[in-house]
Image (cartoon, rainbow, N blue to C red; front, side):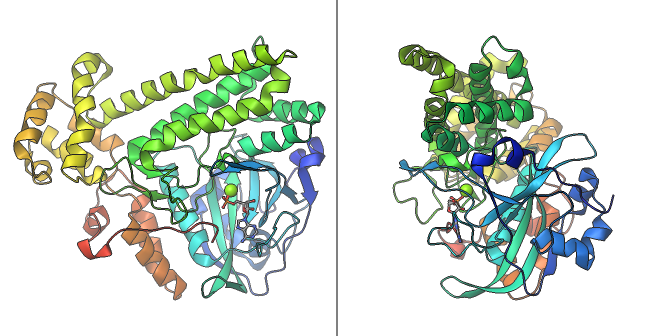
Amino acid sequence: MTHLRLDDRFARELPELAVRWKAEEAPDPRLLVLNEPLATELGVNADWLRTPDGVRLLVGNSVPTGATPVAQAYAGHQFGGFAPRLGDGRALLLGEFVGEDGRLRDLHLKGSGHTPFARAGDGLAAVGPMLREYLVSEAMHALGIPTTRSLAVVATGRRVQRETVLDGAVLARVASSHLRVGSFQYAAATGDRDLLRRLADHAIARHHPQAAEAPHPYLGLFEAVVSAQARLIARWMLVGFVHGVMNTDNMTISGETIDYGPCAFMDVYDPETVFSSIDMWGRYAYGNQPAVATWNLARFAEALLPLLADDLDEAVGMAEAALGAFARQYETAFTAGMRAKLGLSAADEAAAAPLLDELPKLLVDNHIDYTSFFRDLGRAARGDAEPVRGLFVDLAGFDAWLNRWRELAPDGAAMDRVNPVYIPRNHLVEEALTAAAGGDLAPFDRLLSAVTGPFDERPGLQRYAEPAPEEFGRYRTFCGT
Ligand code: AMP
Ligand code: MG
């Protein structure tokens, strides 16, 4: 297929949440990166996407047949404070389409110009942050973590004023939808119960069809989202991913990771790790993510209350009982994942438990690089314990742990299938983006190729597996760029 045929299901079913809008014309569009494997998966001809017509579509200069681009309305709690009207300030939903696999997906543009939701923002995005989202989202996908995908980044030829003047870009994003907790908060705040019901029905049909069969479909929807988010956050925690801005408008109903702003991977293990320059109090620190997800889901439950029961106390009781499942499901997913990272099977559950409990303190006390630790531990499972022992200062303490772990006969090959060797390390991301800003995309392409094959150690990529050099210092990321 060359020409993408887009549906306008969201705009049709939920017109109150959709403002028809057009992208700002990009004066000089230039394709920077195209995700050919994703294009193929979607059934879109990658060669056509590279043509001037294809690039015009990817940057928003032309609207595909049948499409009704809209800016989506949503609300959200940002750092705990409620903002009743956020919405797509610099993004558009072009429409939905069915991929080769029969799944329905959104095609969405980010950085496509200001919309009625832009408030004080300019509606634009710079090349660096859009390449950053592309890189990190594709790394997450390669790690097997549910996420929105990146189809392309197109430089617009427009200048964007930030601290300095930068080159503008548009990211073409693919997602199973862009429904957020904030979408429900917006619908609930209108007081229009019919709209809220239509939104919930739309979400059930698209993401959690089994809820339609439940005795109470809207409670079923809530339970399904709780469960999807519990599994998602466990996956983040297992790879050391810090989202950085877990506002309720950045939490999906599908259970996909969305909105790669100030996110970064933790290097040295520390639950208090925060990278975002605006997260002054560490609300979205690595170790707080499960608690914050629970808090966000409580806001989701509040929005759903009118659909749960006519009696408020009854509705609250139902929501509280369902939310209680988060902690259990998170713990189950995290513990099983951590056992797998240690090369142990479910049969080792009882023996593994104290090892799992003691590990965080060992990692914190010895300032251990989280990703290197598990990969080096895999070598220890195969008989070479020196690399992992070399990471520790308190060797006696670690050896005691190591010996007990070895008695369980961990499977080193299985460990290498779940413990990445290449992640988007902060210093490598910065290096790649700095080069890209100067017009050299080669470092970006090399890093992308490393992190999209995260488990296969390859010759010549050693520096992509190493922690940042000392002089890189403390890393800071910036939001809303
Ligand atoms: P975020 O937390 O980055 O997902 O964005 C929060 C809100 O700010 C959303 O409503 C965005 O659409 C909006 N926003 C972020 N950056 C801009 C921008 N440069 N122009 C207009 N709106 C923006
Ligand atoms: Mg957002």
